[in-house]
Length: 87
Image (cartoon, rainbow, N blue to C red; front, side, top):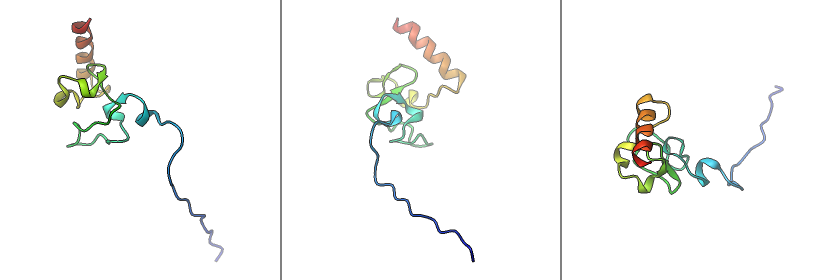
């Protein structure tokens, strides 16, 4: 005896903005289209290309840039090079 009963909790939606869904965000941080092996090219309307620093829908190299993350030095270097070319 003496067990504790848990109150039920049911998630029915959300109110307000979620930065990783409702505002521009890096592809790797997207909550609408989780960043997992095999679905990297998927994107929501607010996914941003890390390399081009633009909306993913306008990225000219999305099939490659969709793999970019801020954690990998090679992508950070590519981002800096892209900025120099675009300036």
